[in-house]
Length: 243
Image (cartoon, rainbow, N blue to C red):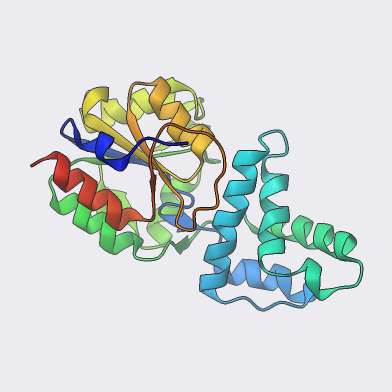
């Protein structure tokens, strides 16, 4: 259950906070393919991207299992279990291999840099707010998506890495750090994330509007923020809110 997208445009959006994983970057495609090769699949980049969102929907639906739910759904989306007689055993083994391989998130999401540049062209500050392990700023730069300040990617004001600041989404405190970096009040900011619990619920607890990036309509969890199919839709939301 989510609000209409139009609800996000009633007040001007003067800054955009973005999750990193699933919004701007994905687990490295080459590493994921290598981890899955022993299990009889050779997925394309598009199939790996699709599997990520299936995994995130599973994680949103089973917060207790978390990343275990993600990896099981990920390999199932790629047909790993269906390729072998002992589906459960092979699926679990593939999920474990995938869990170890997913550490480097350096493959950009489709059109990430292009759509982020379109957002920046609207004149709104951009800040990345990520539950990470201290490496997300480097990963975003390696993926060619963005960096703090000027550089080859899109300029962002800050990359808030939970490991470095000592607080994780959905805690409202990490969103406040993002607002401070953007120089924006909560009522005029928008959060974009693919994890409804951490990104949408967390942002709303901080008084920030949020949209849930769910390109394939996989997520079945209840959340107030509207679902969007990609960053292109976020660009249009920001433009509409600013008249």
